[in-house]
Length: 273
Image 1 (cartoon, one colour):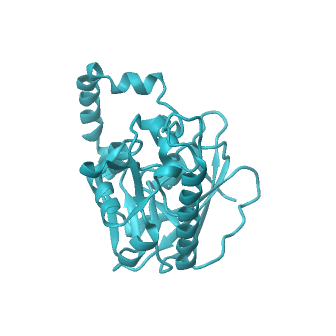
Image 2: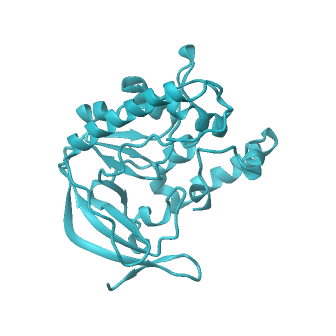
């Protein structure tokens, strides 16, 4: 949970990150990782999208839910594409080429946040989306609604860096000027940067799912898309086991849960209301 909570893509790695990445630490950490991976409670980390157990979590601070978003998925993706292209063009005009310049802006590589997002259920613990959230805020209340989808949906599985790189190779959208300064700080690489063009991905896939292992092996890294062209990408802003739905075929079921966070240990528990 701490590793996910402290993920950040707009500043340099902190001391713990640098130490963990040191060559002297790899052998010891590899043994720990192997032990964790063999633990039965981690068996779901490598599994694909579980269509039967998808939950959309809405995290809240206080009693008021967020404002509902209107518009079809196609409309949201079209608006996202236009805004991303405009942001990149503006950055090319206004931002310096030097990646070390003290500038920050858009750093994520997710589809638009207004789309339906789900994670699987962990039984009595509730949905993964309660527990594993990047750069989490002090949310103290959440609702979780079961989401159903047709069994014939097409899903792109991101189970590691190569799968993420392949998605960017097939549907590239260059974002060098708008991501350059943030991603240089977090990766130390000055390159051409691309993300998936989600409006094009939606033409071939209904959903994109990042497995927990895919997140752990990919998030925050500079992943080569086309090394000969000095083109890279970063998986940024995703959560483990998160699925973004690129279709309107999903529907919230009647099952809804209320969850509250305990002030003593920050654990989530289901509430009657």
